Image 1: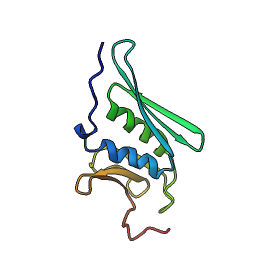
Image 2: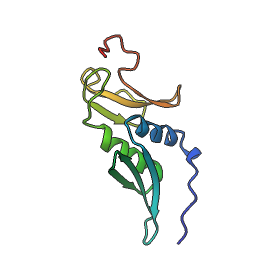
Image 3: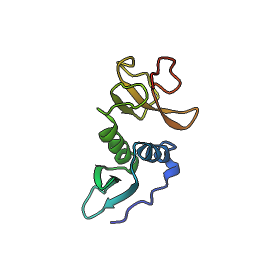
Image 4: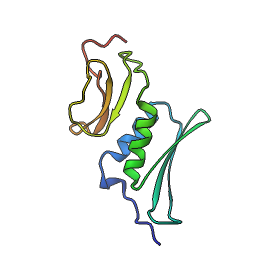
Length: 123
């Protein structure tokens, strides 16, 4: 069984999602795969001060998104002090006044927090 070579340029959100993990304080990131059996499983692995988190999926991009989801959802925005959530699409999200969503911004090609540039930001 052979693993298809992954090219991060296949999805413009992949590298910005890894950069987002760095903005949460991750000091290392690895992308791994297991092809022992079908289907091939991709794992996104990151470390925060000797604390490891892992997420897996059948595609590398989805594995990174799941890791972002695991570490960002239910967090606390240091800027607006609202609970945080992660969403890889740019679509409007529910509860925007209550949750600071980290979402894909196709114009800037990055993941932005919901309160970025918000006039109500308190910190």
